[in-house]
Image (tube, rainbow, N blue to C red; front, side, top):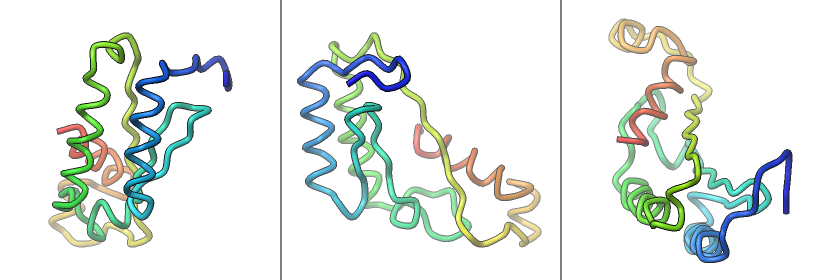
Length: 113
């Protein structure tokens, strides 16, 4: 299960992440080889928005419970934001995000918060 020197997650964490993804297949997927949960950005955020949708907040909270387990504390958690297909053009969003790269960064921050 070692992909690019990524150590296998402990069985309880692996199982919990797999179960969370299996319960929410439209919202997320789990890559056990990388120990990675991937949220579907189109279901997590509205177009051009950094505000996490209500349903996604619930599932992010469930994910937080898993990664905050004592057995998970020695692992690094990386949150990567993604953008959508709509270019950032409105003056308000350009001022805040500058571009879609900035939108993706803000989405990562919003997900962590």
